[in-house]
Image 1 (cartoon, one colour):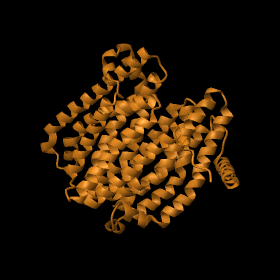
Image 2 (cartoon, helix red, strand yellow; image 1 turned 120 degrees about the vertical axis):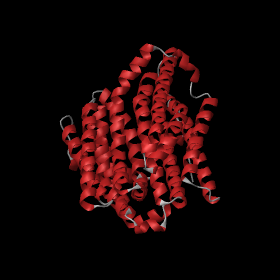
Image 3 (cartoon, one colour; image 1 turned 90 degrees about the horizontal axis):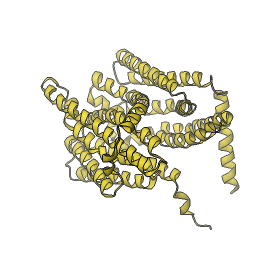
Image 4 (cartoon, helix red, strand yellow; image 1 turned 45 degrees about the vertical axis):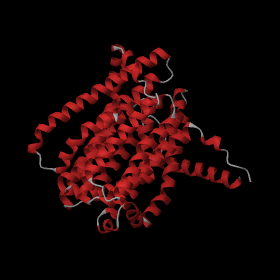
Length: 442
């Protein structure tokens, strides 16, 4: 029997997929420890903190991650130093600004009575600061296509966190404060390892230029809008649940959302692969090829999701128990998970609509799509919670939000590309059949 050629796994596509997969697995393990060690109310407050942190990260990352890759990758040594130094200056400036705002918020704590808000004010600034170095390092490594080193740093960050969390849980020392403290410390560890490894180019900060800073700033402001809107779209459900129903309800909702990583991992990986292929086809003025690639990936994923959704429906209770706890079976978590799985059948076509709009240089249309989904989500969530009076009202918002994006995205993209939904599914089926025939033949 022929041996496995491991050298085939040493490529950027596999390493990027492995990075996403490992990150997701560590995230699920972290959630398991959190749900088994903390009360639902504390879990909700933990999730609330990370929603706010995610919004802050989306501002910094949305502003500079794409800009770093665009202006740094493939340039000469001097230009690369100018760009990286300017990125450090801008990232540092944004971090200092948030620290000042966070410091000002301390003066308002006497008027705030929501514990999750007070916890967030306490930990947000220092956590955001601790993630600054490794954020810049990740952007640089992505531009250099050093996915092996990205994977190693992710192992340091997420791996050390889950080890500490398991140890705290075993010793019965896990608390909300301890969880946030060690999240901060693992960020510090990752940043220090990256800097000592010589990956961050910290010395280039002295080679920044006003011209490069201005160039990065004017480019970044456009990518920021879509990034922030997309993050707000994901966070809106959490804010409305916490504001209307409380932290415990938020803890109930977060578990099925986290379980949706089973569809998000292949979706992110295929989107990244399809994006590069479509970009090459578009730059070569092969419009039909762009359409074909979009139909292939969106169709394959949609069809592949069908058995995944069926399996998820059948084993939803088991998934809830494995990741959370038996007590969550008596809550809305299993129903929410099943509903999210059902709605996820629209994800592949919706995601590739957005990716394709960006590739064909229609980012403004994609931004409008995200804005429409954001407004629909807020209105539908509030209406649903008001009508139902419980967490099931959020599902009302989820359905109308993804449906609005699905309909608007297809309406806009069909102005530029010739395709249909049945055509997408047909192409996806044909591609999956070719792959199956190939492996059966071998």
